[in-house]
Structure formats: structure tokens, C-alpha cells
Image (cartoon, rainbow, N blue to C red; front, side, top):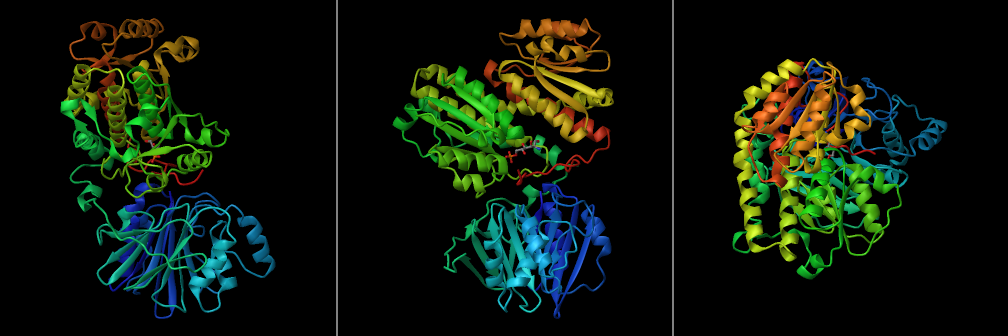
Length: 607
Ligand code: M6R
């Protein structure tokens, strides 16, 4: 979604802003703009489309030593140069860039228009510039506070005033804002990736806080002007982690990182001699964990699919009733909080509005909600009652890959921990751990067989519709495989339980609708073979993911992708990686923008 960067310092401001915006590209955007301040005036350059369009419009000698930039993902108003940020007030003295949604913008705009303000764009954000103009009496910070006190909705905001050179005021409510402290320079950004090339010293701005930065100083206050002491934190990510490092795309890099990222999710969290796991961040005592009677997982998209795998796992192995639900549905359902229930909010970014707001609603009703997040210091990580980081490292591609395998890794550990507290024996626990620890090697083997998957993508990517079929713990993997294919290749794909096709989807089967069928050697194998035969009887093409050396499947499927044999409950790992590769190579073959697919944003911070 939208991205923000602000800079005060001696370097070439335009270059810093453009570089920051490029690092924010992964979030998804459709237009971009910058405002450079210097010599008593603002220079604003905005353009729809990619940042290179904006770069092409930058005049030579654009100088100035502070400025703000923005990537916009349209919500209110079409994708036009005019609707791109930064926006200004009537006099052109105030410039703002805004992430989030102003819910009462129409009412505010009506009042302001009535008072004589002239609007240039169709955006909700522009009202902020005019509100600040209305309240400005020589003090930008004060005017910003007055303006935001009237706003209903969410904002991550940066603004400047021509008459207060060298000052950027930032404010946050519901949309992330982070400040970076460099040497003789200061930054504001919607996420650390925009500034990590310059500094790792950051301060996370909280909701209802206002921050003022100049080249060498910062000050944070609340809306009542009380000073707030902030902790300066050190970002642990390295710059190369947010670069492609020789891969063609971030998605490719992230798929190939999985043997390592899975290890990182597990490492330091296992106790081999007791055949259990330690997850200190849960903040729950053994007694509290023993009292847990059911688990509920809330999430969106890929994280929801990881939650569905976890639900299957926790119910079948830890013998705890567990459901995964779409956060967007939970929030508005007036959910009932049952006694001794434990909730998990799963989110790679930790900023997904649906998940964040559902979590808050559950907490308001007294639930304990633990976060499973990747981004350290993200809203869900900070507001949850405890939790576990998945330590995937930055995930930049819009299509989530390594986060999925790391999220499920944390749930495998949780499952072991809870199971070992109850009925699971030391021997079974040890075998569980041994099997879990073989996963990075097995995932590595699949990555080595990428050529075969690439060939199959070439062969099949021109089909318009696909079915992805799996059962049991691999049913959510089928859903995730379909999501991957549709989001980056734009091929229509649906995931189903293989058993469900006879209840409707089989009507779609013909020679033009291939099915990708997950066939692990588990107890449902024979049933899935029957499903394959049903598809074949209707002239459907079948690409089967089967275990190495499964000759029977090779005979009945049109094509196969072989995966290493693993213990039954661990198949999601080895089944999802070929599907990620299949989606990646198909999108590549079709010439899609793999890392930034159309209409999508990495971190969905609006409802
Ligand atoms: O950051 P989150 O894990 O909360 O994001 C949730 C979804 O928006 C995300 O998984 C989305 O579905 C991805 N594009 C999937 O690849």
C-alpha cells in the first residue's frame, strides 16, 4: 500500500527520496511524488505509474535539504498525476503525504469548501493540507495537532511548511511511521526498508503521537503536548536482505531462501533432550498453557492458509480444538470469547488492517491474542499480548512465500510444546523433532529440481483455469498454491479439497482445465487416486505432486512433480515449494510483473 519517506539532512534530498520510494515499491503503488523544500519554496513533482516516470520528470539541479515523498495506492480518486501525493493547501505553503483513510473527509471537505478552500484532487488526503492551513498560526506542529484531532480514520502523515524551513512533522494513527536517526540527518518513513541503507537506529512512532524532526533533533509528543520519551531501537536486518542479491526477482530469492528461513524459525527454540520446544515470547506459564482448551487463529491471505495448516496440526497432534478464521470476518461478527481460549493473530507484515482490527476487537472483549509476525516492531507484534517472531528476514515480493513456511514452522513448534505437555511421549516427540529438522534439506532438494517445474510451467501456463486439489493438512496447501498462481500470473485458479470436486467443481473439468493434485503417501492416498481417475475420465489433465518413485501416480497423471518422502504431517512444506515455483515460472513465462503484480499491495493497511 502507500509508502512515505521524509528526509532532513545535508545530502541530495531528491536522490534520498527517490531511493527510499524505490525501496517502498514492493508495497504496491500506482503513482508517486516528491516535494523538495529549499530557498523558501516547494518543488512538487508527481507522476502516475512507476517511479521511473517520476524520475524522468525531475528537473536538473533540483536542490533543497529537506523533503517528503510518497507512493500512492489509490483508494479515493483515480490513478492520476493530480491525485498523487504530496498535496498542498490553497497557498501552496503546506505539503503533506498521507497513508491511510480519512473516513470523514467528505464532511470536512464540505466545510472547508464552504469556507473558501479550493481542492485540487479527488483524494481524501488533501483535506489534511487544508485543515492544517486553516489552523496554522505560525506553528506547524500545533496546526497538525488541531487538524488531526478532527480526523476520523487512519493516518501515517508527514508534512512541511515553507515558513518553517528544515522541519518535518509526522503523525501516526493506525498507519505505521518510523523515524530514522542518521549522522547529521533524520528520516521519517512508513517502513524501515526505505531508510535502512542510511541508518539502523530507529524510533517507532505510536498511534496518537506526533514527531517533529529537523536535521539533528527530534521530539515526540502526544496530542496534549506531553513529551514522550522514546526508545531508540536497532534494526537487525542487513541491507543485502532487502536487495535481490543476484536473483532476478525478490520472489525467486525468497523461495530459494526457505531452507535457511525455516531453520531460522526453528533454531534456538528446540530442547532436544526433552523433545520439546521453548517459545518464551508466548508469555504463558506451563499451567496457563495446560489450561488452554481451544485455539483460534485469525489471519488473511497466505497467513490464513498457514493458520489452516496449524489448525489441522494442533487438532490432530496436540488434540486441541483449533480453527483458523479470516480476520476480516471475525471482526464484524461480534465474536464470542470462550473461556480458556487462546488466540493467535498471524501476519507477515504485522500491519494488515483486517488482522490488526480483529485482534483489537478480540482483546477489547478480554481475549489473550498472541502474534505470529515477521516484521519486528510492527503494530500486531507490539499490540499483541505476546507472541513469536518467525525471523524470515524481510519479505519484499508481494506474493508471500518464505513467510508461509516459517509461520507453519512456528506452529509445528507450538504443536510439539503443547503435545509434550500432555500425551506425547519422549520417543514420539524426538521423532517429531528429527523429522522437522530434516525439512530444510528436503526443501533444498525440491529447489534443485526446479528445471522440471520450469518446463511444466512453460507447458501449462497458457491454460486459463486451474484447479488445485489436496486433502487433510494439504488442503490449505492447495488453497495457497491457487492463491500464488492467481496473484502473480493472473491465471484463474481455485483450491478445493479433492473430495469436494464431486460436489460441484467437477463440472468445470474438461481438456482445458488442468488440475494440480497433491498426492502424499498418506492415509488418504487411495481416495485421492480415485479423484484423479474421476478427472481423467472427464478428459481433464492432471499434474500430480507425488512422492519420489511413486510409479502408480506416474502412470495415471499426465505429468508429475516428485517431492521427497517425509512424515505424513510434514507434507505441507514439500508440497508448497513446488507450487510456489510453478506460480513463479508461469508468471515469468507470461511476462508478468512478478514482484509487484497488478492491483496488489504487500501490506494491506486499509480494510
Ligand atoms: O502481512 P500479512 O501476512 O498479514 O498479509 C496477509 C495477506 O495480505 C497476504 O498474505 C497476501 O494474501 C499475499 N499477497 C499472499 O501472497
